[in-house]
Length: 258
Image: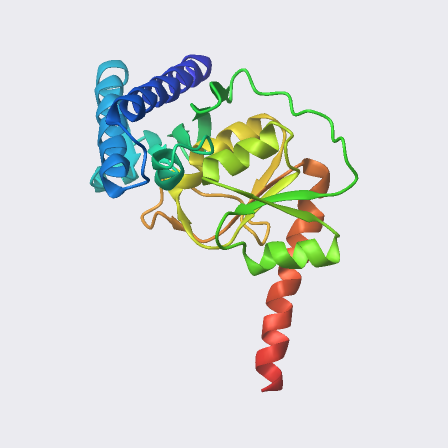
């Protein structure tokens, strides 16, 4: 059911995005406040709950906005969703937020979709996106708007890379898939729902996606916390992992010298 699951993931991500856009249009002046953020989380979660209950009633679900059911750990099929990735950007009226819908089956991600409602774009694992060719020799790295990690700053210095601040995790990963940047480096801590769908689409598109030390991404685990992530063009993956490792080496050497 891989193709059918991917089609469903895309339809659900896009549908939740439409719910969120409608809510933002009717909410009144956008002030970035908590009320709109919370209302968006609830509305998108409710929509995805209803759709998954209708179309995949026997599957388990792991969502940022729902209580975690430990039964998922023994399930064969688990949907991993983030109903609204980037609540701040959404409430501020920006476009750099996303909706994530991914499916984990038997140990691996088998389908995923990332909707970018502010752009009217939905990326799916099937058919996989075709990543555009690079247009610049400068490595462009998507980072947080407020707290770029030390690893990304080290990459900027040692590889003469350009850091490009963007909003949500899904939007930054999608920027790599869409060819707007060459990599996304995160080291500030995330959860499975923050990266499952973007990683599913990135891997389907032939991109590199791993932990910052090069280890593979793992999902539907007991502890849903994932500290770090690299999504990059395949030809840059190894170099970025090596550069990020140098940051740890520097920290170790500094501690040893004290």
